[in-house]
Image 1 (cartoon, rainbow, N blue to C red):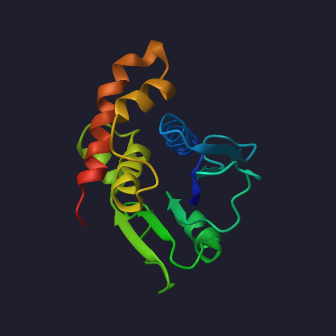
Image 2: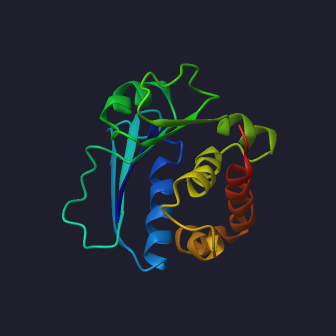
Length: 178
């Protein structure tokens, strides 16, 4: 099985970090993975997206052209990538920042007010991780087991105090019913 994931938003929203987490979690589960970050020259405030492929077989190309899982953190990303998603794809939308609904009827859309949830929980920079929690629950591409093991791979040792709040954010997304 191969799952192509595209995470897109503005620079500074943690798009690349979210992709890196999914890739490391896939590695820890013994999968073949590819992680390809892409961002505009502006960095913070510019566009950013991240292609992740999780597969049982070796990954031939890191390019995701028709994502099976699409995560959009802003309206320009939804506008740009909605039609690229594969038929039957799962699209995860930060409904705090995106007011419109998905226009396609051949995909499953999940609306998560991740930015609002993160702000209310006092962890305003972790909307991306809340979104990942929901992806884990709804897509099955990576398991819910040993999330801390994967977090320890992507959160640097000097930022170890952030491990628990990242785990909290993952659980918030995983448990969100909406």
